[in-house]
Length: 99
Image 1 (cartoon, one colour):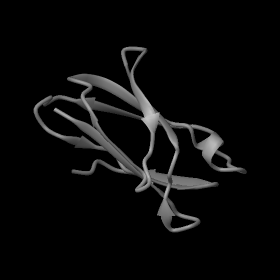
Image 2 (cartoon, rainbow, N blue to C red):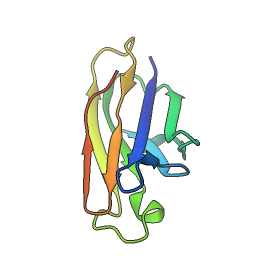
Image 3 (cartoon, rainbow, N blue to C red):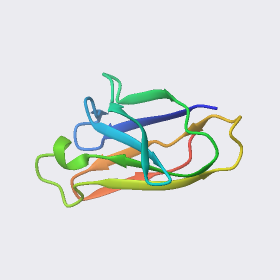
């Protein structure tokens, strides 16, 4: 099973490069890193259960209403790939289950 994310900056229309992201499971950090030049992180293997992916938007956006975006999701089939994209701007964000 693998997990990935892709963050796009809706203001610039470009990938959000260098954004800090961490993945948590049962209150522990299981992975952390920064988005690459294409705004992506891939290859994390969290396993089954409830997870939180935390995007440190406050350090990426100079003036934002949301200093942190937290997406909580459940993995029921650890054999499938799970992708959580984020579209980001200073006063709004959206996410969905990708593939």
